[in-house]
Length: 360
Image (cartoon, rainbow, N blue to C red):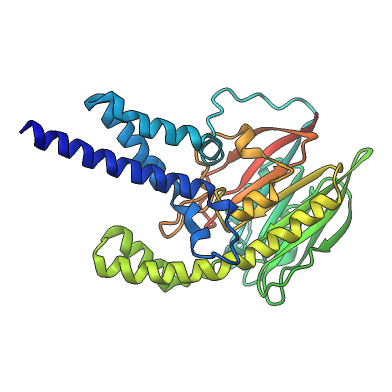
């Protein structure tokens, strides 16, 4: 009996070590070349699963045989920066000082275009933006159509004197910026995409000019049927469901990842070329923080959510896909405060993300 117990312990320890190795691989997958290894570059999406399993093993060994907990502890120490990027724990968050600028980024999913904006029946997304008190609002999947007109949007956001909205990609929706400060220029970032895009703005704030890039990076192009398959796989993980759904998901994800990586390279190049200038980069990256895209864009920037947010900050919340794919990044001369993914509004498939920013 003692021999069986010891054998079971070794088997569990072996499984624990395999899970830790999986966690390490996921944590460092952002350093893989997504063009050469598109499937492996998807691994960052699985990091939360391996992290949770590692923590469960840690708790188990602490109760059963504490020496074996070392495997989980060492693995987590090697992943500390990735863990903090994924789930920062800023329990004591500073209040934003007077004079801070509030930046808000939101994939508005077309404002629910069939929902009008009237005094008796307000469009909830427009109402939220109007009451947000943000100084600069960046929007993705911006469009006026159906029962909601451009004049309705401009009326609701009339406090914003300066605005720009233009097409993203060859056949995509629009990207928009509404600002209390003068928008001096707005130019598309040069990269190829059918439906997505990025816009570089110059914004005059008092005696300073900041550069702001509003992004809607390459979508994974999952159809409604693809998403339903994924939900069925989560709810009933039978072998046939898992195999078919995983094949479809990996195919779609691996097609989008190298395209998105090239877009990220274009954005990172602009940031490097303008080194020393005040930068804010925000928007829908369509990938998790544990990815090549996030790593390469944030290389010389600070992730506002990592610096002043709390928890996993899930910003996409539909069809069982729960990830933080919306971001605000700032140059080192900025400090951020109270970065928040606001899950109080569920009218889009994304939650808005906002933070306060001030010069150091």
